[in-house]
Structures are given as structure tokens and as C-alpha cells.
Amino acid sequence: MGLDLPRPRPRIVFAAPLGVGMAAERERFDLFLTARWGIADVRERLERGMPAGHALIDLEDVWLGEPALAGQVVAADYRIGLLVPVDGARLREAAACLLTATTIPRAREKGGRTIRYDLRPLLEDIRADGEPPEVRVRTRFDPERGVGRPEEVLGALAEAAGLPLEPASIVRERLILAGER
Image 1: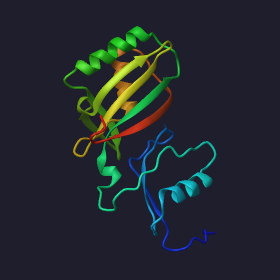
Image 2 (image 1 turned 135 degrees about the horizontal axis):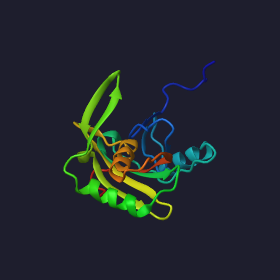
Image 3 (image 1 turned 135 degrees about the vertical axis):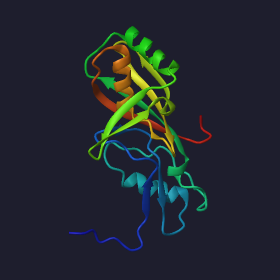
């Protein structure tokens, strides 16, 4: 049973994929319209059709020849809530060790084989704030190395702290575009 939508349809392209089960705030996307509309009209229609629990934060009219949003993403900020409260001082010390490390060797399974890589070039910042601590991470998006994954950063932090760390939640708080740092 398909939707009876007029053709051609507007197209939405999200700036970056989101991990399975991960929440997001302030997501960015390109919306390609099939006709020229004013921002006020687009805003009104989007807000009217917004799903419950979602809000339109901002809207910009962008020149059609501008680079795609996906190619402009250079980093992302994540907030990781921990399943079991742990010693914040120990986490902060481990986070500082990760930031001063020259390499952070990691391995992950992909397609039935083990991929080994260095997480350090993909980790821009890591902090453990509050009591019980919440982990804040900024990872980089690199066209050659890939994307820093928050769950991999948490794994490296667990190893550095010598603690079992399980995420209760991972939220991508925002995507950072080139020139926004």
C-alpha cells in the first residue's frame, strides 16, 4: 500500500548516518524542494507536519550549487550516560590519558573479519562531567580514516580506566560543519 504523493517529491538527505538505537538532537539535513518556496511557507508546513516530540530549530535557504551538507560534516558531539555510576575522578584521569596518547589501537568486527585501526586521529575531545559522571565526546569525520564512533571511544575509556563501562544512552547532540569550530 503506497502513499499517493505528487511527483516529483521533495527529497531529504541527512548530513550523517546515525548509529542504530542512538538518539539525536539538532540533526541537520538537506531538503530539496521541487518548487521555489519562501522560508516562511516552508517553515509553516514543516512545523505543521512535525512528528510528536520533534521541533524545527532552524531553516536556511541555501544556494543549490553549494556543497552537500554531508561533505561539510567534520565532527560530532555525543553525550553518553552510563548504566552503572562509576568514580568520576578515575574517568577524568583516563580521559586525560586518551587525549595525550599518540595512538589508541582498536579493533572491530566488520563483515566477518577484524578491522584494526587507530582511534586517536578520530578523537578530538573527551570529558567526564558531573557526579555520577556523564561522558562527553567529540569525534572527527575523516574522508580517509572514517568516523570516530562514540561506543569505540567508550570502550577505549573503559580500558584506560580499568572499569567496565556500559552505555545507558548515547545521544548525538550536534554535527559540526567545517568552519564552525
